Every structure is written in C-alpha cells, then in structure tokens.
Length: 124
Image (cartoon, rainbow, N blue to C red; front, side):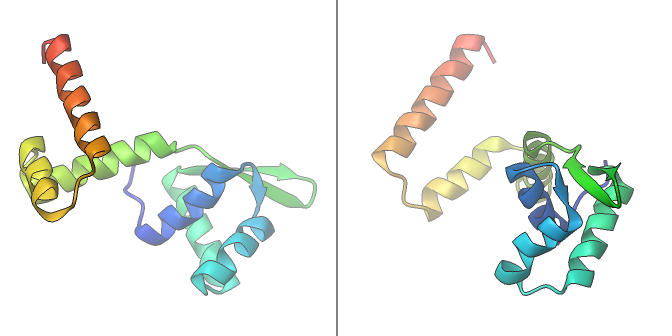
C-alpha cells in the first residue's frame, strides 16, 4: 500500500471511529477541529480511495465510505518506517531514546518488563 500522509491519517481516524460514513459526515467531523475546507477534505478522501485505503459504496444518491486499511496495519507500517528511518531498524535504540527523553512511570516500566519477559518466554 502507498503510505498515507498525516492529513490522510486524520480522515482515516474519523472512519476508524465509525464507519461507514458519508462524505458529508466526514467533512462535518473534520471541519472544526482542523479548519480545513470541504474541498480539502474531499480531496483527501479521494486520495485515500485511489490508494485503496478506503472503499466507497453507492447508497442511493450518496456514497458510504469504509476503511479498508485497518488502524493496526497502518500503525505497523508507520512504526516500521520510523524504526527504519530513524533508528536503523533496531528496537533497542528506540527504547533507549525514549527512556532518556521521556519520564517513564512505574506502570510504563512494569509494562516494558512484561514485554521483555514475554519475548524471552517465546524464545526470540
């Protein structure tokens, strides 16, 4: 799949929350929080159609839009891209960066320990 832009991801977020939706509903959901014009939102929606990230099904005189790209698949692609571009494809430098630059709560640390334990149990 062709990567989706940050603006296109905002449109996808609306569809991931509730789908199917009409273009009017998508415009209404995005206009106020983004300040985008209706034409901009419709252009983004058409780009997503062209990329195969959403489908459009005719419903009378309107179309209903449904995401084909799942949030999980998008997150996986985006995180892999970040990992490759910024950290040479390695997870340890990413985690090291966050532990140095972000304040981790006790809960965060416990979750990281559990992840490492689970990885070790699986033999990876």
